[in-house]
Amino acid sequence: MRKPIIVGNWKMNKTIAATKAFVEAVDPEVTDKADWGIATPYLALQTAKAGAKNLIVAAENVHFKDSGAYTGEVSVEMLKEIGVEWVILGHSERRQYFGETDETVNAKMIQVLKNDMTPIVCVGETLEQYEAGTTKDVVKTQVVAAYKDVCPKCAARSVIAYEPVWAIGTGKTATNEIAQDVCGYIRSVVAELYGQEVADQVRIQYGGSVKPEGLKALLEQPDIDGALVGGASLVEDSYKAMIAAL
Ligand code: PEP
Image (cartoon, rainbow, N blue to C red; front, side):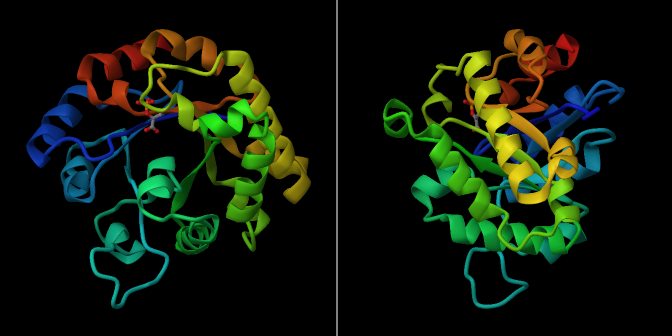
């Protein structure tokens, strides 16, 4: 059985003070039903780590090199020094606005996994690709590229987030049937790459306008093992409602 994992992606939101207050209010008492996490801007990570007893604290990005002349970037070593072991990679906003490519996502996957961190690697099609009926081709290309030269043991402990770009921050969620269909397909792609045993271990999240009231039914889908949540993860009451919903 795969344990559900729900992670909030805060994007460029919340100050250090707001992070401290949120973590104090929301940190779950128990994590027997699911793993819960937040991905915060770099500046707030240390504060989130200091306050979190049970919340996973993730970064929203990391560089693929160990160190060097990469102005504005943050390394795996820097994250690990403050106890951050999780990182979102290849979010569509990074692909769209910051030049992230399948190749850089793959380089980051290797860097993160080699350093015993856990990636949440995002894949998903744009509205245009969805309307053209190429969703599965797009996600397959992204998954195959992300996992190039990643060993089976590393792949097994990674997390994939299927996030249709047209559903992110738009209020339009994919139906549970669409989300299940694509997440099931992603698992079959992982099985093609690594075999069924690895595919059965990989946790696959859905992301795109997830709300507390829809979470339980989403997680009842056989290939959906969690959610990556933007907007609803920023509001204390919504985050608590998600915890209460399971
Ligand atoms: C996201 O940013 O990964 C996301 C899914 O955002 P939202 O829930 O706001 O659509």
